[in-house]
Length: 236
Figure 1: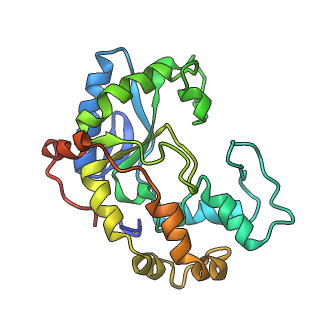
Figure 2 (figure 1 turned 135 degrees about the vertical axis):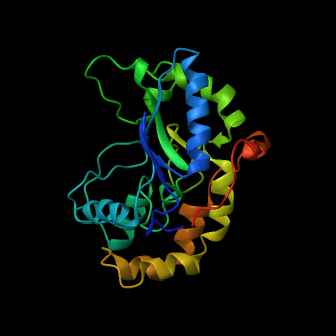
Figure 3 (figure 1 turned 180 degrees about the horizontal axis):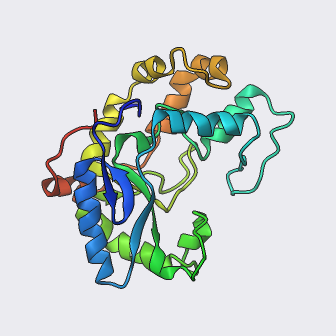
């Protein structure tokens, strides 16, 4: 649930990714269907451990990794209070223990066929817009993703995490996982952890949980019905 173990994860080499077996099965089926439309659907970031998320958090808090505002422009951390830093980080990066990537149900997606040789995806909203390099991927997913159980949890700004048109979530796993990830579970995961801004985070944890964990899009019924594609078990 909080990324501290990975016994619920399996690894694929084609394409390289780590997901819960049920999500892996659904992703591979969706990838095969996309190939028929000339799209090379590839996960860019799948399972992420607690320690990986902790490293991301601490490096952003310490100014060692880029900090971005809601429009994706660089922010200067100098002069920010701890509370302001926490909110700035949470626009784009989850608290360790609270990332949906811990569950093995979520991944970021690109179309490798749309990239020029040597070109790398930046995972920016413009790439997925109507005139972006991944516009065809976006249009295809809008019609098809739910048939394989996937949806966009960060479809629009709900006052917390910014929209992420690259982030897909496997509903049959992600919905029960979200219900289980309570404030108490998250607090236990953060106990004794060397988290930058820890006192501020713990003092605000119920608010942060509501705003940055629970404030996501509900999956369409079509995505929930795709549970039949998997041997739907919940993440450990």
